[in-house]
Length: 154
Image 1: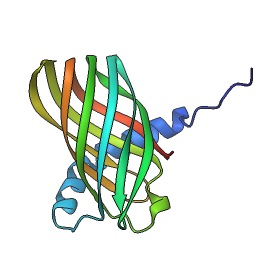
Image 2: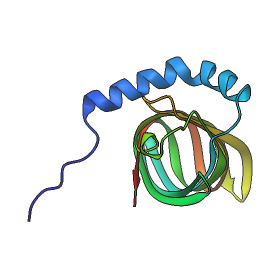
Image 3: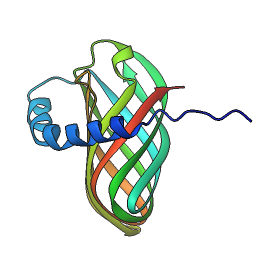
Image 4: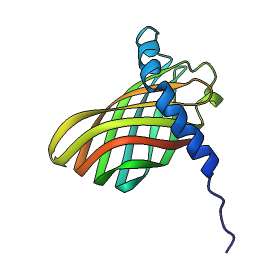
């Protein structure tokens, strides 16, 4: 059976995590002053025990059309397992092809069963595309840290 190469390399994950630390604060302020390019919804399963992993999918609404995508990632920080539903706005997206690829993600939130502390997600990619998302989680998890995520159109 042929092995499939992961889209994540150690250097890509490290670079994206460093970028998350730098742009998390400045990206949020810039995005508030701009008009959104589109909207996005994401459904994802997240599992963490100091190192976290996530897999799921979503839909980008851009240019009057809907585009389905897969999303997955690796990160640092957190404990537990949860299902995440997120939605929000996309900024700085001028060309559809700039949406795909690696993103740096900052996150914060907690969930215990159906008792939820509101959390948020902030993602940015090397092309400057930003996603600011409101999230809702179900499960049992404490989340604080950063991730490298990869988005690929279906």
